[in-house]
Amino acid sequence: MDTARLSSFVSGLWDDEIVPQLVEYIRIPNKSPMFDPKWVEHGYMDAAVKLMETWARSKLSALPGATLEVVRLEGRTPLIYIEVPGQNDDTVVLYGHLDKQPEMTGWAEGLGPWTPVLKGDKLYGRGGADDGYAIFGSLAALLALQEQGIPHARCVVLIEACEESGSYDLPYYVDHLADRIGNPSLVVCLDSGCGNYDQLWLTTSLRGMTGGELTVQVLEEGVHSGDASGVVPSSFRILRDLLSRLEDPETGTIRPKELYVDIPQPRLEQAKKSAEVLGTAVYDKFPFVEGMNPVVSDLTELVLNRTWRPQLAVTGVDGMPPLESAGNVLRPKTSVKLSLRVPPTLSGAKAGQFVKQLLEKDPPYGAKVTFKLEKDGSGWSAPQLSPWLEQVVAEASQNHFGAPAVYMGEGGSIPFMGMLGEKFPKAQFLITGVLGPHSNAHGPNEFLHIPTGKKVSMVVAEVVARHFEQASKG
Image 1: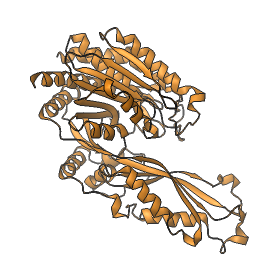
Image 2: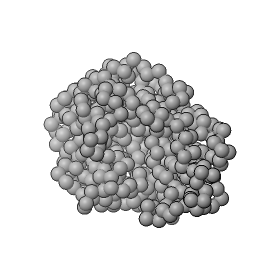
Image 3: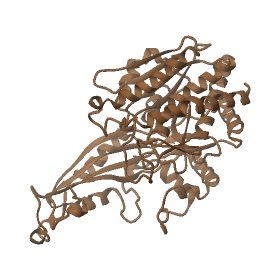
Image 4: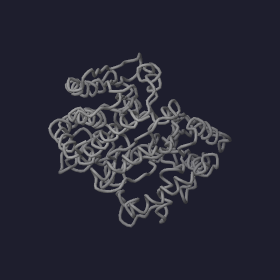
């Protein structure tokens, strides 16, 4: 492979076509179904699918025999299925998603979730980095191989529209398309993070997630706080007490031992190495307020906290009026949205049932306590890399980033990885992405670092090419 030619081709395609496509994609408020229950009626998801489908179809003529279908199962979000014939019978799956997180507040002046803004090498707006670029980056890699006449295995591109809601539609599509997908020996996922923009980062594990709505109700209606306080217990205080069953309020440590696993020694070593490479970037990539510190000072412990240990976040609240409308009323109920990240090898479903039982049992004062489970996605821990894949990753990182590759777990979840890991235990996985420092996926001011997107596409091209060579030997 001519790496200079590869770089020139991919970079040109990104500049001329992919970035303009992503600009238009960012404008579409195609929120995941959990955040837009009327997504069918609104039509934004279909608009995003159409944008990607149109561009991808325009490239199929450069990939002999390639086909594209938008698969639609009744009552489920659509899925883009692309099949590119190869020069052997092996199969590579390339995965991404096109649904988005909701708007979130706090965007800087001039920026917004549906307002694409190019500033230097960054494209701001919701979904460009998570995960609109995936279909473009995947096809860019295959087009680059075709441009040089380099053979590759049969490739299947899967772009789902439900990932930000837990990928609950995806198993139905995987089963529906099982015969067409085949038995992949390599899975490429472009929906993960990177510790910096200076080298290639491979994701070795992903935490699972469970969560839902916790509601504490004490009254049928609100009453005068001066009359009721001291007689009627506050729903907020009860809720706070219930959360303390799950989380130590002083340290943030999750209390039940049932929500932990033993961390494998290789992952401990990778965490230490990642901490050495990143230094204080482990935490100072976050927009702390002045004077704020991370939960601990040990960098390796911080890496392990975000990759292999359970952690709780309260992501929403209901039952509380805004400050300007907060009268002297003892409110009837308080509800919060809980997001609990669980270790990669812990069952998300079992963790969710455990948390539900923990929070609902023996409610203080006999209050009405309900925990409505919404998510139960399990995490994933990658199998050991084959020597050929480890070698090509090292070479590709040097070729395109000029620095060694780094291996690290991620704190987020990609349910599809766990699903494929179970179905195809012998497959190799290349999980990487562009979500680096300050890119702020799910939050305000999300951006795509364009140079990293280009380089990741180049790395994928090299890995797919070497995969073919390896399969031919075996």
